[in-house]
Length: 278
Image (tube, rainbow, N blue to C red; front, side, top):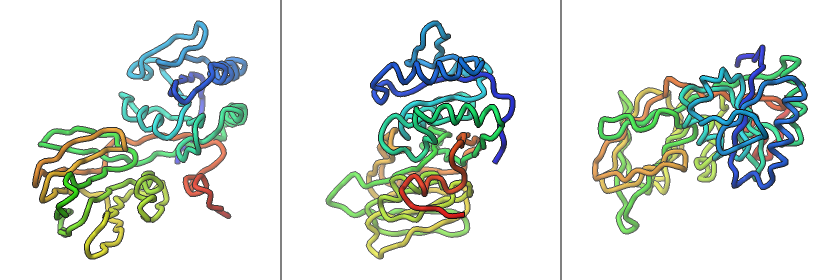
């Protein structure tokens, strides 16, 4: 974890479908301005005469923090579309978000934490995925989800991570990061993993022999299915896989950067409603 210092330039973006009222944007932007921060907005968000940039332009604006208004899906989409990872302060304007750190009415707490140099920056590992010998995604924060295309055939999945392999009949498989352990994998009874670790979590779905979740080092992994299958990345990008088509999953060289104001390690467990003492 890395402390943040000398924060002056703030960019504000978000999901207009989640932000029901412009006054939320106005309140957050005004709060930063009152405290002598420079602000820009990122489309589709707008605020008065503040410069409005495309998301690929914020790195050129020397942005210190990107304030993202929305839920977890908005934060995941933003991370994937940044040319260079920028520290993200998630502001939850939807349902209970695990990645978002504060609610809009807590923005003053965040500003005070910035001024007192009390923010913490968590770097989270991500996945990169190669399909048909081409890198298709390098900023997958949560998971790669494999599922059979046919509901009448139970295929065999081959998982190879040298020097071992697993070959089992099952409905599907989730390969998640520690961050993703509280997402789709958790809904299928997978374990919660400390978000600061560097591991792959394998969570089989509907395994004939009840193969349990497995935690392995994040070395390159090749996955294929004996029949046509579907690959979904972070719940937002879909690929159709041919029979025996190989997918390579590796740890990305890039790191997502999430700013923490009110919580630190294991914060995602607290967001799910469990008490953490210590």
